Image 1 (cartoon, rainbow, N blue to C red):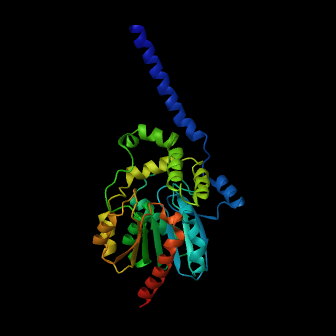
Image 2: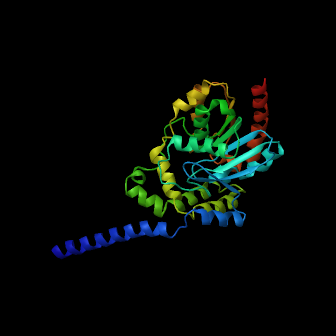
Image 3: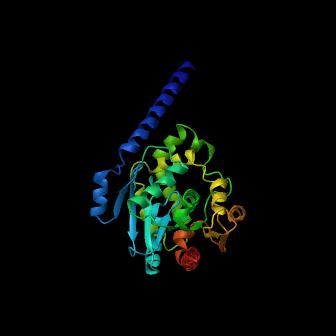
Length: 323
């Protein structure tokens, strides 16, 4: 029995060492998004331009007329700016100047080692607009977590926002994002660094399984997750930003005159459609556009249908602001 206990202890020690080694190796095998990597991305035409903020360097795609009304697109918590890729041309054709960033921690933006809090996200948007020389009002459109961030940005900067559009946003109901062990110290850190990126890729692929846009999204996810810090950034947000329950920013928006539109699928399992009722209580001026039978991935997968409502809403909001 003593020998069994001895060898069992040795085996456990070996397992611990191997797990610890994979934690560090996983990081070493992924390239950093540094100046050299950014130069390659621009040279290969995969990235457009970069803007420095106090939190890190952000990648941003800017298109459309310089003098057009600005639309700021804020993506959700995994897909990066590519989640709005197929919105750019329709918005530009409608006369808008489109600003589509990868939030810090995602896409081709830097993955800083700081707490990913609400202020972290809202302040980087303000600094990005300043860095682009955009000081007037903007139309803010956010999807999922990006909808919550867009709402918080509007609440903090109401005089800077012409309209707010939320695509199946979080913030209206407490939902468990990950199972308990995934959030534990050490355990969660190991999981999100070593296997987090692959798990997120699988989740996104499954959510787009019935969409003709699936192949493009899968290829993008493989590209952005190859860089160091992706999984860690998602865990960082989970630990430092309670995005599932945000009454204060929503109520603050409800006290403004900012026009608000929410778009939601009735079969959303991530941020259930029923949460729209809570948001409407907080934001009396909110309009709701319902997509019967649709799930959570409506921003990219249902772009044409959604834009047919969003673009007229932006025009009406402009008239209200100028009236």
